[in-house]
Image (cartoon, rainbow, N blue to C red):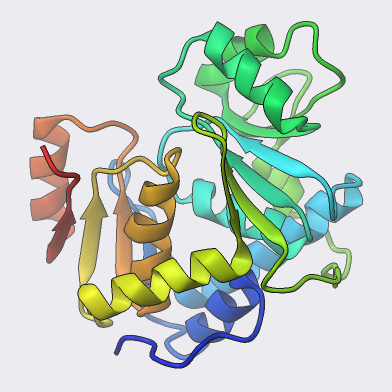
Length: 255
């Protein structure tokens, strides 16, 4: 059932409250390996990741630079950054080191989320910048693993935030969205494309673009649907994922 009431909390608070309505329903599915996270698991992991980020000194005024392909860890880390009081800088991992370096400079980020496969690119882009805490989905020397971050036992941070607080930054075009603006987009999507707990969505808009993260990921999650992730858009992978995970909604950009 699509949400209809205007939200009065921050983006992660609102989404996590909705996740508790259907805790056992699938939320995130890795389209390649098939690993699944329920809405209850999503709620829990966002809280643990937020605590881990706070333990690193991440909080209001900070930006988590996201340079990674689509995977369940992407929205978990991004929502955790917002729950910790910071903002998310979305980057397209297909960009070269020079463009990524300009994006990092514009964001002023001190924390980055990436993968082991993209680590060399991120380090090249960050050359000459200030200290950058690297959080990696996987294991790599000189970085903090995402698994270690999730193992933080600290209490969840409770930063002061409002609908007017900055939430998402599109590094490529300088787009800046508040929590309220993102929630407005989610509600608009829910009205235009209502989904339910039986729906399984696959978005071919990468999360590194704000439209992919908001319309392709957050809007379905807010309605109790499941989101299948793929690290790249290839016809064979899309076809396999549609059949394997019984996708009911395929979200595409205009050609």
